[in-house]
Image (cartoon, rainbow, N blue to C red; front, side):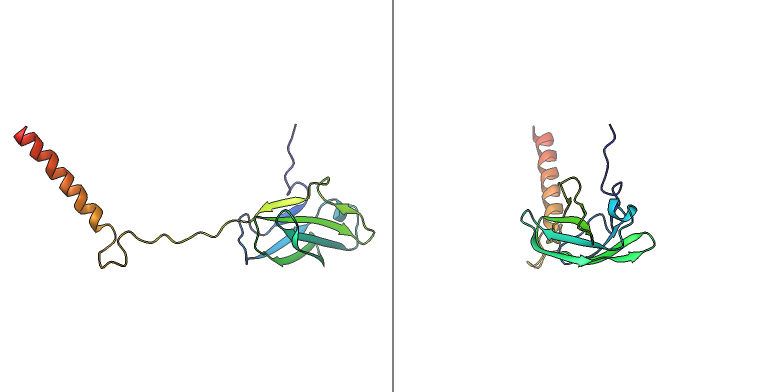
Length: 140
């Protein structure tokens, strides 16, 4: 059995990973487009409850239909599509669900802010440990 991906269904995002606040282009060339829909509307929302859900008319392009949205806060982006005759492509009732990536936090350097260079304390500790091991061998 072959597992179909969203891209196989004709739903293509401009980025594989995206974050809250990003602009995201969505290209649709799925079932509705291939069946000759003259216009397609994107229905999208964020999180399990379709928070901040919206409908927007997609622009007809040579590859199908195109829309651009701004990603809102939430753990997921949910998409589905409808044409002007009220036919839906909602991935067989499952919608097209994408994970919104969490923003990466910059890690603070060890020792930064206390006047020492990052890593200086670690280098000193290694030298101290080496000295103690040598002392045991000599005296032991």
